[in-house]
Picture 1: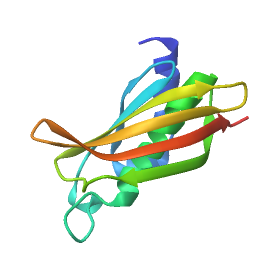
Picture 2: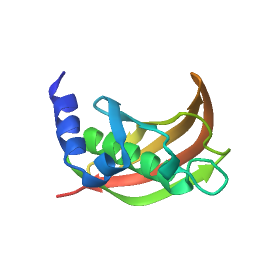
Picture 3: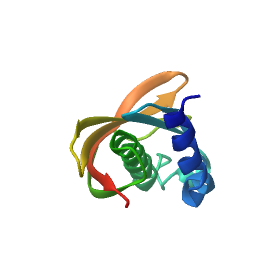
Picture 4: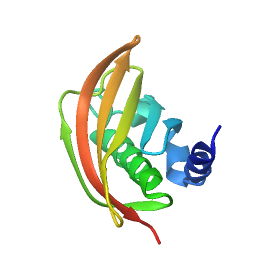
Length: 135
């Protein structure tokens, strides 16, 4: 595990909400991050799909990690947009975020969120956000 991955793991493990919801940081690099969540009944809405708030959380946090790592430290989301493409149906969700542009004071990141059912990934949401250093 390199220093970037150690830093990402330390930050993720210090997030009470991420731990509470059951998310996992499954991959990270100097400008990307992947979060995974096993879908449980308490993550679902009335139709049995993963709640949009759960999908949004994964996209937002993955984007913030990707941008923060690209900017070299702790970060915050200052703007975020998500498009839901299809219901989150399956046994888990995977959010993969990538930094697309980095300046001195902000990073623009995009994320794809997939619903995984029996190993088959289906794109269920696309998101984009602006990330700034927390300091």
